[in-house]
Image (cartoon, rainbow, N blue to C red):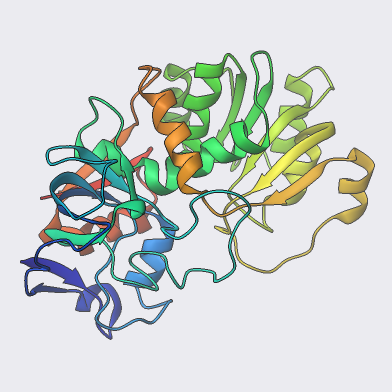
Length: 333
């Protein structure tokens, strides 16, 4: 079976290899024929060599169809469409220690492969009617936005949300917020992308390249109250503006580090806002199941910018690095 694995040299050295078939599932396991994945910033770090792991099968997100179930498996049956979990050991409850040591495509082999045999608990059902590529987007980006806004933020109709940029997590945040009846402000350096965000329901947009004080502009949009929730994907380079935008007692959920992993936290400004700053990494299997049930109501479908064949995975990562995408980038085979 074909798979894409890492090798020294980064994207230019990614290998399409032929691996032995994983065989039949054992007790508690399922065999899945994989057909789709989606790209995340985390995957790019592994593929480009920033997280050196030689010979690792790439991709945290994986979606496909169950071919066979092992003894004792009752949750799935052959033919079910399923999607992987970013933290396969985190079933429910508080986060587990261990970092990415058990994350597919990083600490363990991922889903850029034709077939996989894994514990049944490493998957959930896919949303009804979703393509495999669409389903794969919920594993990391979708669940992160869901946990930030619904599980932690307790988002409700009439709330205001600020999403930074127009990548996968931010567009999911926009869609979840609008489906809940919340109002959304969003940032980008591209006026074209901001227009697309408006078509998805964003009420207020601001080009951060043209307005360095975008946090104040979002604050003013709320008539001086501030937004209830900030989905913060930038990190130290954007946090000060996010604090400027949030309301007294509001919440900022730190998800990404696109502007770096170190920097100053404007503690006085955060304290004066009496805002909550939370750091999160994706979510548990139970939270993913809750998200799937919500998507089964037909609220929306994910935004897929472009889909690449598996053999062109390196090109897909280069496209991600260009920053030209809106929403998610998919891979299918």
